[in-house]
Amino acid sequence: MTAMFKILSVLLTYPEEEMQAAAGALRSAIAGERVLDTPCRARLVALVDELAERDLMDLQERYVFLFDRTRSLSLHLFEHVHGESRDRGQAMVDLRGMYEAAGLEIAANELPDYLPLFLEFLATQPLDEARALLLRTLHIISAIRERLAKRDSIYAGVFEALESLAAAKPDAEELEALRQAPDDDPGDLQALDRAWAEEPVTFGPGAGSSCPAERLETRLRASIRSVADTQSGGVR
Image 1 (cartoon, helix red, strand yellow):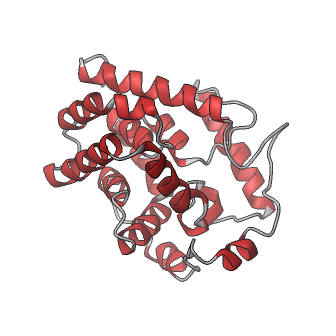
Image 2 (spheres, one colour):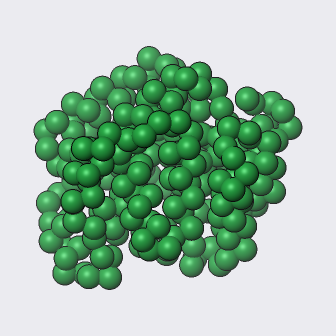
Image 3 (cartoon, one colour):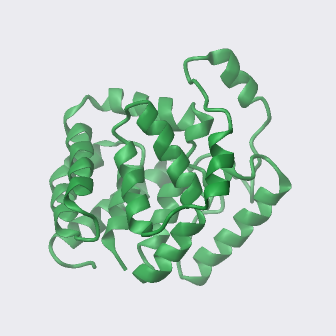
């Protein structure tokens, strides 16, 4: 297994005070992970520095603007390939089953296709198996990275790191199909209203489009502790 998946999971989580306080541990953990080249690690450290130094409310507003209000940048993987179709429900069930078989328990109202959660799962797997699973989503990862790069977003470095970790190329046809999909402008409120007109599909009792705040904070704290353990040699 590699702790880099855990680090990337933390970096893609909604910014909280715990993340800012853990900046030193994150920097050290990134420096100690040699599965990425130096320029790629430097871009991740730049993101850590920005998350540590900028006003928290500004960081949170930017995060919501990018990943919650912009459907084409959604961190829910199946949003990009299944939308609200019935196929998405079965894909959710299958992914949840894979997590449970590996011993990763998630709450009934957590959507298993949430990218930080998927990366948390990959961090528990042998690197070769994690790469094989990551490859299945690589066309989505690459499309989001391109869209973030077009916006000059520092978050593009996280998706570049995932592309590097996959050690492969995405399926060209699948990537091109995503490139042809609309790339939302979160500043166009009328277009956003049209894009989100349908009610989100739910899976399981009390399920919603995002994890409850308390559950997210618990996972964030656990992930940061894991990264800190990595810094001291406790996780590899």
